[in-house]
Length: 148
Ligand code: HEM
Image 1: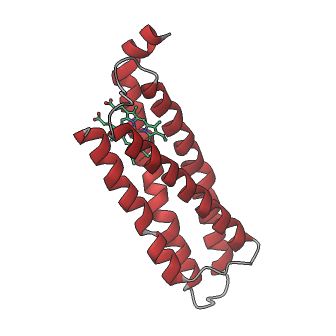
Image 2: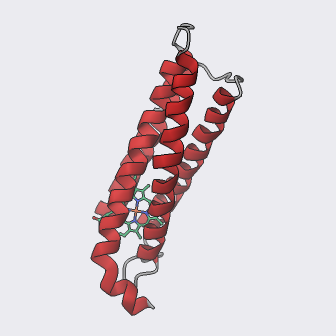
Image 3: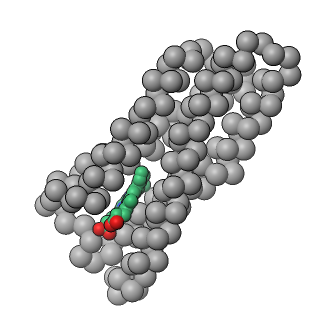
């Protein structure tokens, strides 16, 4: 099994990075959509348009991309010689991907609030939360590339 993972390594890493890019695109864009949604100033008929965009972005892109990122990422973890848990970087990476996954689920809950007409998060809060994936991305990329 570990032999197969070792021979697949470059492909696994390529697919991991492709999934990461798709997931990150959604994690950056969905909170932006929420900001526009909150600040639409009651323009008639726009609410359902935002809700459809938010639902499709989450279901068609973000959920599959997150699952693919996890599958290929875990395949890399089990590839022999890739992760040395006595180093620091696997732990900063692991903490950050857990944070990213938490953020994804936080956005999914906010989407449900909008769909139920019960959003109570302000545009300002969404703007601030928009910085979370950026910070985590910086920590993750430095972790996997610098490998301190
Ligand atoms: C979801 C769980 C994740 C797991 C289990 C995981 C695990 C891994 C592992 C073990 C590697 C291999 C490192 C190496 O080849 O030396 C890797 C590479 C990489 N990961 Fe992840 N990862 C995850 C999510 C993410 C996320 C969210 C990002 C970006 C935001 C990311 C960005 C990268 C990049 C850019 C590389 C390639 C680094 C290189 O060039 O060697 N990963 N990942």
